Image (cartoon, rainbow, N blue to C red; front, top):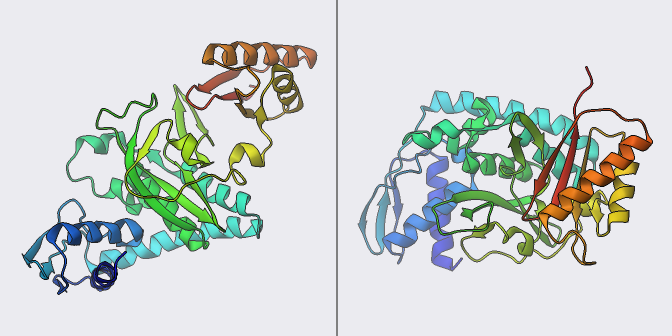
Length: 329
């Protein structure tokens, strides 16, 4: 950010932290620039959940602006909410700290804690004043939120553990068609000098009555995220795969033989998740991936006399297959 924008950012940040009703910004910036900085402050700081970001009231002229924030809670209510949120963060910390310097397991713990505890709030999409669903209040306390609230919750947890993380805004469509208003929010993390995209909302999957944690969008590259996401703004190029879920768990297959071995080796697990590569001319279509998965699974189960019921789920855009075994009654 240019120097004047950085100064405006700090003024707005300090004003919102103090819950000021009048924030004066005497800098050579336009109204649009102030509004953009204001929203950036709110997305960068999930603990400003008490600010109504659906409206931006301001007065003045170029070079002298007065922001008039609207606060959603009283100071007493904010104090209670902060205490409740801190309690939840401490519970996550008690588990996450056991992973020490294992970057993959630590981030996965934070990812999974959000996925397990937050359901997508479809009802809020029909309302104009569903403030909680767009904030960490919805994610942490109501246990229901939309993508924005989920992304903010993940960011807050990451920041608590020293992982740099921002909320990314843009569009997302499971078929890669961005012509409609499929607005979405997800995250970008930076670990060491490596940047990765993470979409916790899309990793919280429902397939009929089957709810499961997915890792399709856990630490993915720019190339992969762009298949069905379209971020807005100038963002770092994500090229590393070191902490991608499938690399860390050795869950890539590029031939039918490799798929057979992976399923056979992991058959005792509750679930088997893998990503099929197309670099050897196999798994070129979703139909081929489904057919060969069924064949390899049938062979492995027959060989071990395994009679468990199972469900198959596929992500066609990313060539990912998932096998979920049902609990035996």
